[in-house]
Length: 283
Image 1 (tube, rainbow, N blue to C red):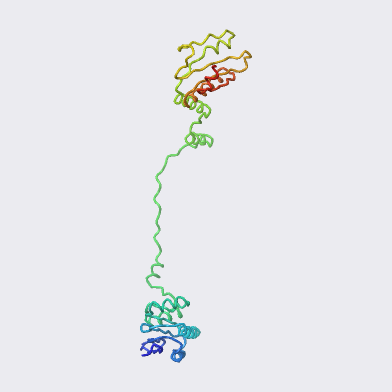
Image 2 (tube, rainbow, N blue to C red):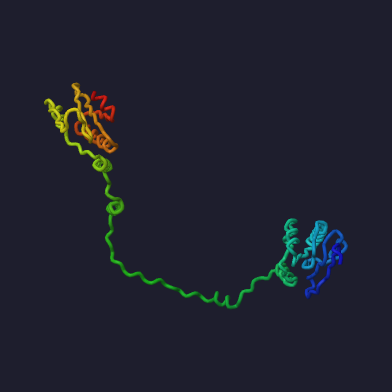
């Protein structure tokens, strides 16, 4: 058998409107004469083409198959192609002919499915369903609710107040809470707990301020810190000089300055001294 020829073998089928054909060989341009014998199939029939022995389908043969399929569609003929190899399946997908590929369903089943879709039958109602529909459904009564004692009616205002008390918590004083937290943080972070300075009270009362006592010899500063308070004669603003060594001491002196301004009612200027700046101020 030459590869350039195509042979079509019809297969017997019990249904009158069903046709089965086996394609053998290669579908090319020389298969035009053989494919023309399939143009005379009756309308509204089913055609099943078995490609199990087809070796190849080239572009010219695919064009001839496409013309045949268009003619069958105009005659309302169902087309099923079974047992196509991978190369033919890929060629059909590239040209949009995938709808004709089938998994090998027999033509008899296809004819039965076509007949059922063309002449739909009305659904039959079984007799048992009619009998059940005619039977009245039993009446189910809800169980009686137990008698509940009568509760006195509460006024709308009292009920609303009770609801608000049960839902809303006790209001918080945010100002007092902020002050309490500030004092707590000051006690935790400050390493120095300052004591009241007697010089301020004596200055406000009009008496001369007593000299501050020093525990260290003259000319030597404390290894921890030192502070000096100067009271100007104008009695307008107080100055506070602090020699600090770390950030915790700085935070403590800021809290202490705020505490003095609140309790004395005077403006106090806080000035920090670090290392060489303090030595230069002493000189």
